[in-house]
Picture (cartoon, rainbow, N blue to C red):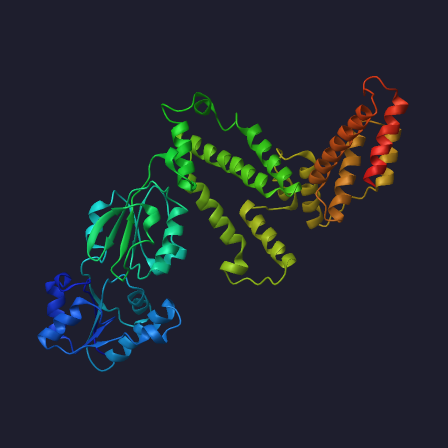
Length: 458
């Protein structure tokens, strides 16, 4: 098997490095990713034979297949002699594929980056990507983005729309077109007179939070850091984990309410409020040296990977019930339960009581213990002895019945509260429509109006 050497050659003859010249002159066989390059002209002048892989552009159905075909062609040629594989840029997808499949890693001689002079306008961290990979771009307005090889106008349009999802139209942008760098408006990315594989665009970072059109997770963290900073908001700076407990619970239940009302817009808004609580707690923890937000994301990712052994491991689960069984077993291992009582004790005391009741009952059921009171018996005992203890038994019995039917008691009671409120408001409106006042009518009239509302709902 011959030695494969990958050489980055840039676009023009001026980009060819001395190292590349030496490798090319010693090569047993030269394969060019494409003959549309300055190297092809130089090799012809030097009388050095070469072949190109241009035919694959017509044969391949997509860029991924093209990369596989090119890599295989290089390996096939290397079975007989040493091969130099020349590409515009060693970050080419075919090189990535070659590095992946080759038994012996090829040598790599990195030439000048194809984005060339655009790099002079970068302001810090740069996300660099080929235009063909626009769908997988992971953009952040806090970083520069450099998109190379914008070969045609259609690709330029896709790139522009992707960039505008992240950067404001006012973002500073520069284009490399026909070898020259010029400043452009971001909306003009797909309005150049010509495009080819040398065309590239750089969009620089936008660090002014007030100019952004869209905000990502990093921007949210920056907002929290500013609010908690020395010149931040007095209220935010005073908050602690303890002082925010009520806010966290309230935001969670407002999110549940948006789901109950099937309101996507409101749900989006409430999820934002909930996420803000997470980031605020993480920022407080960072300032106190407790943990970082990356510790939070690391912990939950590890937990999800561990609990989904049927996806990330060798466990098998073909149904939702089998998944839940695996999930519960893994949770027991994580908690370090030594007995069934440990499982019940680990149910959070801060949960709403109905939610906690169902969790306790579910874990008791896993241990083979069922709540044995019936609704009739529980209510009868309460009517005979109306104490908090007997009422607690009634509510536990209701929780057990709800669990048997796959219902969430907490959500059910929340829905009941909502229905009661709506019914009350409708009743009062009906009274007013008839010229009355709820405070002035008799109990019998109130009951009549209440029943009318109930009948109208039925």
